[in-house]
Image 1: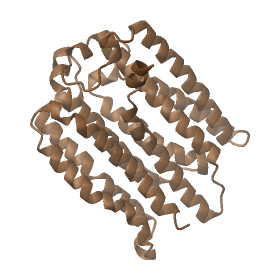
Image 2 (image 1 turned 135 degrees about the vertical axis):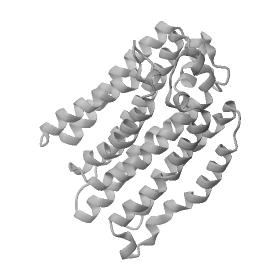
Image 3 (image 1 turned 90 degrees about the horizontal axis):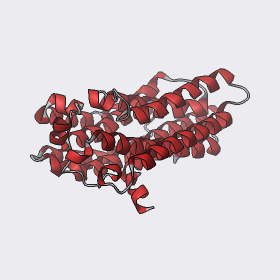
Amino acid sequence: MSDWIKAARLRTLPLSLSGIIMGAFIAKWRLYGEGGIWDWKIFALALLVTLLYQILSNYANDYGDGVKGTDAKRINEAESRAVASGKITAKQMKNAVILFSLLSFVATVALLYVAFIPKYMNEFYIFIGLGVASILAAIGYTVGKKPYGYMGLGDLFVFIFFGLVSVCGSYFLFTKTFSWDMLLPGTAIGMMSMAVLNLNNMRDIESDRLSGKNSLALRLGFKNAMIYEIILLQLPLILILIFFGVNGFFQTQQYYVFIVMILLLPLMKLRRKIMSVKEPKELDPFLKQVGIMTFMMAVLTAFGLNYFN
């Protein structure tokens, strides 16, 4: 059981929850102002679905890199990968991927049933398609003949599914509407998620070169990937500020919503530490730190918008 728990890579779970928290609690704030109803059942099921997606993605990643021999070439991996180390066989991991795919789909249907049935049938079918796409994206990062993670497209898919789909999609589950300003927090969470993936790929840049995994970090080179990383960590709080501005918080003087800005200093310190790294293996501790920063950004934004309502 401990091997399965390690393979689930629990340190990645706060990152996956961030988009749901951001979208759901912006919806709660907006529904409160409009006299609408915010359903806790939708929130609980959305959390379950995203956790299942994340575990599925981690198992599929372990399986895909394991059978391709990518993990065998990694000497900087802090967490021992289950298939490559032989702790879990490739067949067992493949069965786990199938099981979690089914569990993810069932949980997705349950979530969408509660959110949309019986009044919003068209939306139900559209989101079923998004759910299937999310499951396929979770698997396709390293699994298959042409995994998109090996073609340098991982950052794009992470931005779409961890950022835009997670934030805007969870917002839609509650409000049944799409608002263009949701692209701002969606982009913020997406960029933080890309920052985590880029750190991971920068850490593994040499082993990925040997295994033929052409991640974006490898294509850019370590120096340019570092510049890319700093940009990804620089913009999210600015996007959150723009979101507050678009919604009139500078004019209303409701300054409590800006509590998320307390992350400005720790993010600056984190960026400086990352920039000082010379050896890729030294980047591993920052993966968890950026994930926690992303989670705190979502939580503090949710708190600021809803605490005084």
